[in-house]
Image (cartoon, rainbow, N blue to C red; front, side):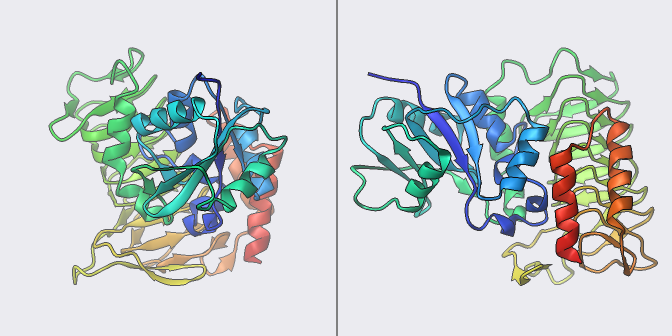
Length: 386
């Protein structure tokens, strides 16, 4: 007999390796498609209780402050699943059906690694389930292996834009919301994949959007923009050329310039003429410098990874594989460094009080508020750079 199941998204131990996204975000907030990971679970498992937990308590408090509709933990049979794993809606439904009919624990594997476990006996706290996930082994009565993608570095998310958009297109009855405003001269090209234009989005004259692509809720595509194979999250304003990139949300790239193979977090502003390189002249693998050292991305194309609240001056030219932290202002007379720490202004530190004040002003312009928990997390990030 089937029963109601709870979905508990849990952060993995290596979540910090999603830098700079992970500085202010939880892993389940990764946006690969119309929906973030947690939003996709909510859309698919609407009859289930979808909730979250993490050892990073400040991050969870910030997330819940920004997403107050997230349901609290309940004492229910629970499928605990890693928050950084992308699964197709069909796979999600199969897992839910399997768990709702099972009376025994189930171990869930993906790509040779454990990504989840189902506990039919309700437990009192999410911490008990997180412990159970850490101790999944061959003793579990039932095992299931699913197809999916583990996102362990931020550039890996860009690989799966097409999958995410196809999945999310299957969850809606219409790809273009009735409230969206599209100028008659705009071109929507679905030759290579669907184009989703969400509620209250605005597509201005002579813009070209080539699928697979998403234009998120309340986002604006400026005249003559060329957007292809990209995810534009909610509340963004975009122009120029954007290719194979993800803008998490509430960020601006309004003017001419190229953005390619990049992941841009929230509340970022790219000044007029900002352009990034995403391919080395040697056509070799792109290496990036992360806080823990130099890494080979194993990819020919990697552009810009930019953290929340960071900004670039007009005419900024980013080198291939540039990584920029949180709340930095990139102002340079030449090419900026390929590794830009958080809270930097030129070669000096950016005062955290000033950074918080600017963040509040920027968010107020979009009728948003920098909450107490998120401000605390922002200040904590600044302390880590001191």
